[in-house]
Image 1 (tube, rainbow, N blue to C red):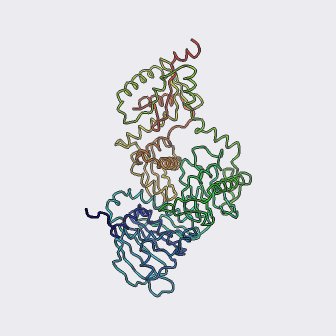
Image 2: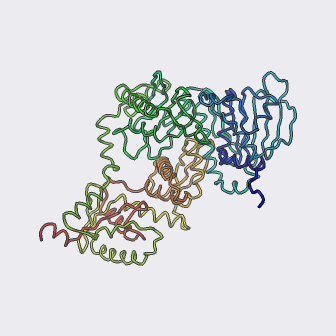
Image 3: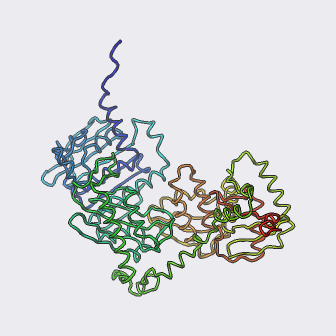
Length: 606
């Protein structure tokens, strides 16, 4: 038998290794931006076309490279950062393993121009498939320009796995934000298809956060600053009222490197205990500086997951620093003198998050939602009811049991035709509906979510909802990541009654909305929809359209605590029982419970 194990050719080995580092355009963007930072640049420009698929270019004014270094930079494991194994545990730079440029050269066509200040001319290099195809002297400013064209041109199967341009651009924006956030003293810009998305002048940490995450945070940031011999922590956290339903605006940096850490996130969440709702997420941008020997950043190809030598100390330190900052804020709110003092003195800005406000938050619809489990256990134990659950087993909208559903609808509908005169509202949250055999307790918010979800499902599949044109179109400006997301959703939103167009520079003009969105509320409705959409984004089982439908249904549903007229209650109940699946929301929450008269009699010994 001949030997069967053989060494892979270099170009194939490089392409396989590149898959660990360069998974999509955003991966290459991260590596190129970090190299520019390491080169000592104070101006870094990122240019992408077709969400990086056809072009990613980073131009910096850093120290540049010699001709030999320019060639060596594309070799695997070639690095200026490590000379012996001990250096691996003293890393203070962004890139260090010498894989990034080699990986990029393995899966794209690369053009490099670079020049050092002491050299008269620079060097121009073209690389394709890990091989240098052209090298010549060139006139160039001090610094480096590296362009990667036609990503995965030689690995078409990988290219086929890339998402839409809008989705890939969102990933690029995420990576850009993570690097730009770390270095407020460096000018950054991002241009996509000729349009400037970000233009970030050098400034303070707070200014950079506001530039990246939006002006809504300007007066709502609490500074965090603690120093010890072991580690330092600094940055900003959002005031409790800025907490959102999605964890998007959360950034941890260790020695200026963005990391993901569920463990440290838990420390911050604990610091906010009882200040925000359990299902809300606070904003934070926190920097931890500690001795590089106390942390191992080489545990993952993208260097986003790290290990601390003593993670319990770090956890306790993060939690106490954030708690201390929030406690100081609640006693002595600080004025931001960069802003109009008239605005700063407003109650909403200057007053602390008092016990009264906490109580108010606890009394909101999130807390007041009817706890079906407790109710059901109570009924079961007291009355020996067993089959009431049948009315709200979680169905799928594609369920084969459509015939059974139809029979249930007919029975319920015939019941309701006789009884809708006897409706009343309980706690401005529940609708009590008498039936021939007892009564239904309808949760108005859950019921309305089901109605809207089915209405939107029909609209997006071909029967668009009518648009109510605005007399005065509204202009809204969004943070760049939200602007990219909204652009992606515009075609589907048109089917759902929204008429809006991009207006340049992360701005949109809202020319019309569905009839049930109040005039003057257009901007808020769209912003809340985006928040809800991002909340669903981590759930891979939902398609883009499904996430949009559920987001709009949740956002537009009449909330618990809203007083309804008799006509509104009747319309809501009739619409609910005309739904294809009336028993649950799209998320599986029950819309109503049935209480039967004979079982109620038993409860009273009758």
